[in-house]
Image (cartoon, rainbow, N blue to C red; front, side, top):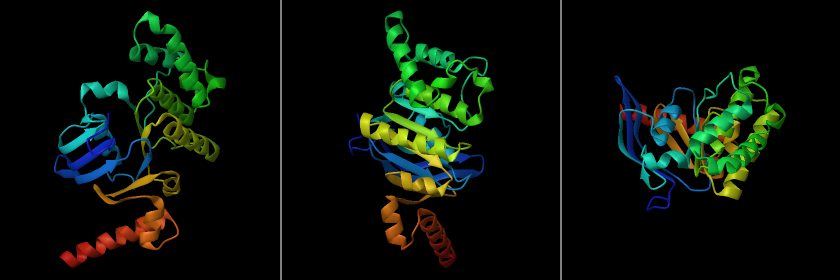
Length: 255
């Protein structure tokens, strides 16, 4: 189920205040279902806060934020959203398979689902290319591999929405490419909606649509091609810098 507008995520006046600082400043945007939306901007611009708001774990959120047709954080959304944080959420004293077995049992309790759980675990391990490490302790894996275990956990319940906070940090170019291929296959084959954050501008070209953020505000909400065309630039990074300069000029003129 989507919002009445047909959006997977819809925000209006979304604001988050932490202490004396306004982290998100009245954001308004939509995320289309079955597409990859990139959330791009420099570290500290509010990307992680926005993602926590979407999955319902961020405190002191005001405004309106609807996710898959329900208010963000509604209990019915829990099995429908997969969330991967920047810090891998795995048990280091368990193997890859044991980690997934545990989380699969939490997601699908009941003995009658045991065979389904085993199949889901094997499929998730295969999708993130960790079959050769399935019986390795998570604590012995590299940081990038542990990130892929977290992604495998998020894929277990076949979520309608995947929220991925900088999932490719620390990965080599081959693994980054493979993960982005997986993201596109999830969107195309399963109809999964993906919200993927990054501060690496070259990943913008891999997204269907982009939200460009800076200092708690959204500078642009458009396709990579439209951003390049409208700013008359060759890359999304140049378009982003153009938007930053334009925003600075407007602020100066308003003083």
